[in-house]
Length: 243
Image (cartoon, rainbow, N blue to C red; front, side, top):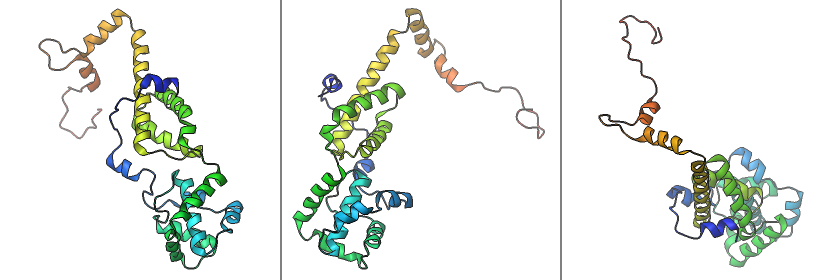
């Protein structure tokens, strides 16, 4: 466990992901773009050698789905053939399989998908989340400290970080809690550091900005946020507003 993890602890953090984000985590959120199809679902020579060892078109196509899906999503699907039809068609075309519906036979034997997952992890060099948790924690902390960004923004960066390093995605709530905890701690440290740099006189001036004076409806800060107001009378002609 990293020093940051020890400081943050495992307290309950407020969830920040929407229901839709949770539902689409580690899943296809519609068909991939043409660019993504070319980048993640292209079978190179090494892939073809690996796939050539499979018996039957259904097995070859199913294995190809698992091999490319994890590269795109960063995780395996519970149902490996639950993918957009365009993905199946693109892979079937590359493998010279005329009838892509043969992939339905891939899930008939439960152990097959697990065996192929293990082969894929070894062949592509995928790593478990626990192996990089400390490095990721440090990255999140640095990102929150230097940008001041909130957990929603940083969460998207975390997904890209994991995929670029070929790390299998953990459970969505586990990753959400980690991001929330580290970002909170980093922001508290940032605010504490900034507060220590403010003199007593500066602190008093800042407080005066947020307090509503007697007889007023808004604070000076709120008035400053509204910007200047043009109270000059306008002529009745068609002059432009700056005239």
